[in-house]
Image 1 (tube, helix red, strand yellow):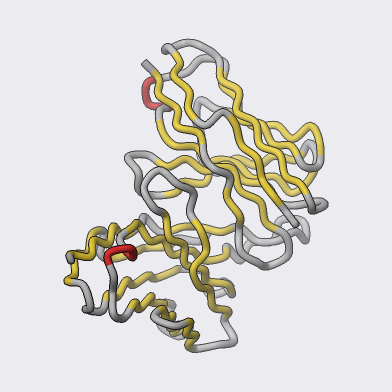
Image 2: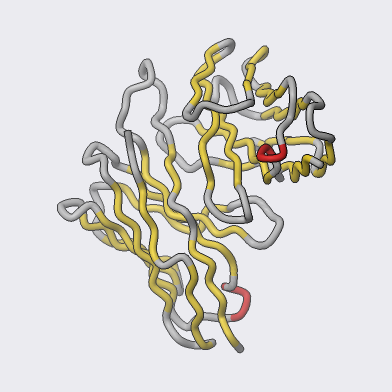
Length: 111
Length: 117
């Protein structure tokens, strides 16, 4: 069966520090991978998606970047965090035209 | 690209009443419409979905209707229970072609449903 792992679950970082969130998927090949951000516990904003290794598309301009070094690994990064980067970050995967499966999420607080 | 609007943003009902959440989408090429439930601090999870070749789908107390002509779809929850309290998201596939890969899922802004005992 397919599973998705996302870590860490919570993170408190100072303004200006770097960020690295990791997401891995098991039990499937060549999934579409996504990073969403959820601010104030509400809407899901699509940040990045990837259809394959090294292929990253950004939906909104921001202080973040993403990379996909392996088929089932998706990384969200920042060189210098801003206060506005605080939020709940969710990784998700999808194959074919089916539902998306979400990771457990990372609660990021920038202080 | 796709734009999904969801209403209402908050909904409070008495236990046993029905709840209806409505969404509209902009891309006529969209063909898959899932609904997710997110409990506090947890990941969104699929509760029901519908494809564009179907007008209605039901699963116990939950039903979804789709009107492709009007580009709107709705979630109906009957006989609500306190455990139905959560944030509900609708989503629609973005009809853009990303090199032959699967389409995006664009989410609505969510509805906070509170079921009062």
